Length: 288
Ligand SMILES: NC(=O)c1ccc[n+]([C@@H]2O[C@H](COP(=O)([O-])OP(=O)(O)OC[C@H]3O[C@@H](n4cnc5c(N)ncnc54)[C@H](O)[C@@H]3O)[C@@H](O)[C@H]2O)c1
Image (cartoon, rainbow, N blue to C red):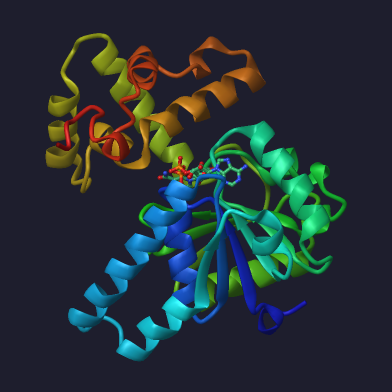
């Protein structure tokens, strides 16, 4: 298969990542169906699309015709069969829980056409943990976007031992079609490139806050002022979702059994209070 054979894309999940990946692919001219188990999330994604596109046109960032085309290219449905039944390429951006992803990939294998590539946007889970839930492991890979997906240029494409060269090539070509810079990881590694580097920083920042050495605000201020990062680690966790940090830690801990992989006490506390960050209007900071 070649990139020119990819016409229809299915995006699974309409959360933080999925709604923007769906719009990004629709803006690039693909016919896109975005699905989620939550009708509320689908409604929010559709509302976002209807607000975002006219704003981009008004700012002169995209022509009206492209906005009109993207709007007609993109549809939302709760029905997985409807979303993936004709897809040439599926990007899974559902919640970071292994069992949910494995179940989704098994369902997608049954529903999507045999030629379809099934990619996961997981932040940490390598596709070999999921590919064996399908009968097409050669067509399974990681395609990892960054948040916000409409803005961030980098996409990590990870080749698993099961992934064919053709799948990797089409996925890298898709990055280019989306106006992204694809970076290919030739071997699987937990956390890929960027999140491995970021995790080291977050681990240290959480340790310092947990020890009471400085507050999250002070640590963020230190990182932005001294290291020149646009956002400190706590502000960034609020943005990406403290629930995601919790799930990532728990998935890793389940796998390694190493207590140092557990989410930090601060993350556990926020998770159980339901303070996930921007999406719940409260995390390390308040967004009322
Ligand atoms: N948040 C980030 O900054 C970020 C960045 C890169 C990658 N990711 C990855 O993207 C994925 C999604 O993360 P997110 O932050 O968008 O999460 P999110 O919680 O904002 O959204 C996840 C969505 O998945 C939906 N969902 C759950 N089970 C489903 C199912 N069986 N079928 C369809 N939809 C289902 C939920 O209803 C929710 O709307 C995760 O794998 C995460 O690791 C997140």
